[in-house]
Image 1 (cartoon, rainbow, N blue to C red):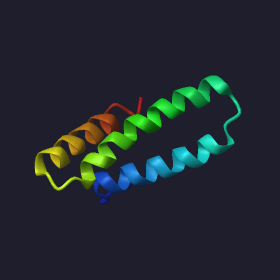
Image 2: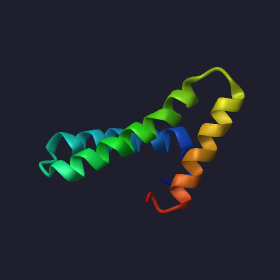
Image 3: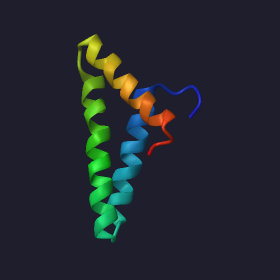
Image 4: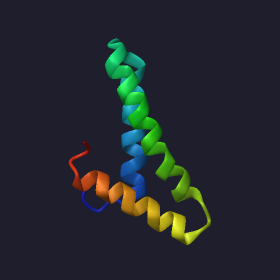
Amino acid sequence: MQGLGLETVLVHNCRELSQYLADCRDLVEHSRLQRLLRSLQAPLVMFQSKEPQLWIDAAYHVRDWLDAGRD
């Protein structure tokens, strides 16, 4: 994903996670991944805001998540 903006990476990951959740049959994993999706959607809302500080905070959240190996 070299050269893509953080918001693009976030959108792609949210989309892929949503598609995976639709087919996930393990209830424990499904619950865990739903929490992850909600956590990823919060920065997405911040990216859509017109307030620069929220956009910057969202970028830091996503960058930290990417640097942590998506754990």
